[in-house]
Image (cartoon, rainbow over all chains, first blue to last red; front, side):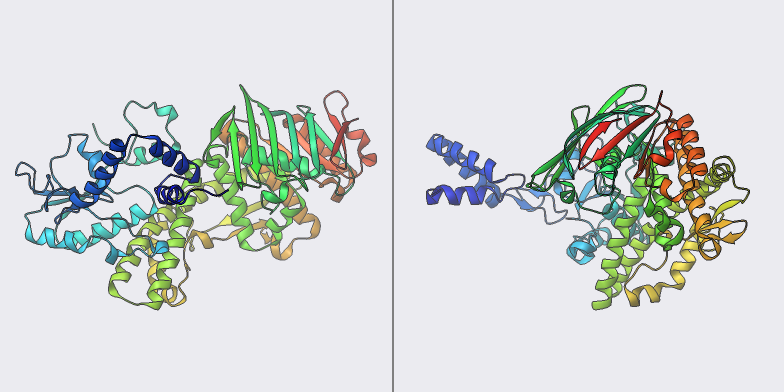
Length: 198
Length: 370
């Protein structure tokens, strides 16, 4: 079947988005086609602004409107501790808790030799510069608990300790409000190993 | 645990077969290539989501069809229905437990324990060390999902580590070596957990093996599995030994860009009366050991999981004399549910206990009760 060219182009572009297949792309394109012109304009403007106005904080790599993100430029934040995360989206997750008042550092990934990702491709050199210049006392590692995250944590801990910084990691354990009997064995196992004294 | 019924749709030779089973012994009789083993394969699929013969899911689709479907009804304290649907077009296998789709197949492994005894078991006693590792891994994984998780993680680390060694070989740098050391450290902490599980498993399992030899196989020989991790059988030493060996072989590993040290190279040695089976065992002694291993697995899982496994025996009786076969099937009838395939039933008619057992004839993918 022949599809009008502008529609085909829109489908192709939309289907490049994560978790959007050809069918969803077609549905989205047809939806946009039926929408009011100003609705489409707003969407286009939002996408363009996203790309034009948002940049990455030159200090920590967080998503930001200014050169320095709101967290790095906030004088009330504790500058003695830096929490290292994989992606900027992890900052959003931690910020929602309101339990952490330190700074962040976005690594931009984890060590993954199979995908050709080494320490050179991560924002690690900038972290080293930060601990030299700033009065950082502690680095808190908050990477995902998979093989790549674990190996990266070990790497970072070794490098950072060698430079005299205290290194800690977020604890692994049971979800709040979850029933012990429904948790998977691996989680319970780790929680037992990481038990705390009362 | 009992498998009450099963249905196979477009699964190998079976176009549409539905069967109800006995809670004791089910004899499945038919000529070669008629689809008896396929019934066992279907049961194995339903309990583990995989085949026990080395084929792809696509190979199991009936010739000329696009998908297969398997259904099984299990009874434990509760009833559970498992459905597996595989489509050639999407290449996807969907697994449903009580109509709810399951994403990770590890969610099923161990829930419906199954023990198989097939001709391929001779690789376990006669083949390479890898076959014995596979056997040990599969038994511990069925009993402990913690172990299974460590194993999956460990294999991931091995792949990452060898890929990194390849890069170091092509492009040597201090920085890459630091990364390598981090992966090595994680290899150690994960590997040690695997070793700990294996050491305590072998110790426990040996008791089950001895019992199976004496009570089922009626043998006076003493069987034993010997296992050491780098010359130690004390889990307290595992980490130190592992670290030391890795240090000693570091250059060797980097030169060959291969993981040369670790539990993935462990050896499990089988002995009877202090003689190594692989070197000194006769044909009959190998067979006895293979059968004893599976009965030991059966009782080990039964105790660990508090569920009685289903026993699948494929074409084993042909190799045993009538006395042995009778003894084994009598024993099976007492301990739980079993499925036994036979090419010829005429020699075994006296085994059949008409009250409890079932005889199913399979011919060209069609099943009939006798």
